[in-house]
Length: 364
Image (cartoon, rainbow, N blue to C red; front, top):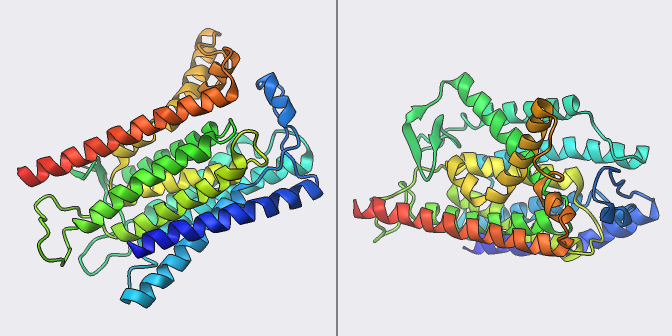
């Protein structure tokens, strides 16, 4: 528990104090956001707002994770720097580099077009493939790898086990989907950061519960009839706690009216964490419930594109779907707060489902 708290506190402190430094630096050098002309007209006033604030989130998460790992090594002689945690952060950082290149091109070329779709997709696919290959390695003393080739909800569906090639394709789809979903959600002040804070807070609970009731726990008096076969649940909780703290610290400056945007650097980094956590905690399907708003944002864009190309009509005023409500007359802060409420509801529902599954497993 100490490691989880240290990770969150350190990440929050780093994020809340590093972000204003970036704001000053980016403003001094004129590194501001370019607004797409086809976007909501109310957003034109945001032109020039410092971008690439995701650098602060990335630094905060890594520092929170490292400090917590060192605390674990000093206090209990272990509990930090496991394959699961490092692979999650490795995937997220690789995606952040892709996002940073995209943001850099936008900033230096002074327009809202960065990397092309093909180049961006290639970067995402390569990061996903490397992650997919590595999570099947690093077997620990209990014979567990960071991920399994089985599809998972609360636990693995052993009956649905993928061949290696199909598993890698599944990981690519997962990483591509989540990184873009969080990226699409980052369109209103504070929306992505606040939503991610709630999602990561929920996974701190899940991961700590998996650690408490691990099938390999040596604690006395613990009912392991409904135990979890997750390789490094404590380290996953540390990553999630660091991400929670980093998002809250960044939200202080990103809340409306935003003084800085996280950019693709931050949104793709956080999307990578969502994808990585879902895989190594063996809850890929449960993450769809927890991150339902991210899924809705992604699906809205998909529906808009497919509908327009097949029928020539657009079912939404504008996508991602938060812009649909903006163009319908909702104030930006109203959309953000209502979407946050939807995230809170989805997280609460996921917690209820998770606990219900544990009760059913222990009573059975």
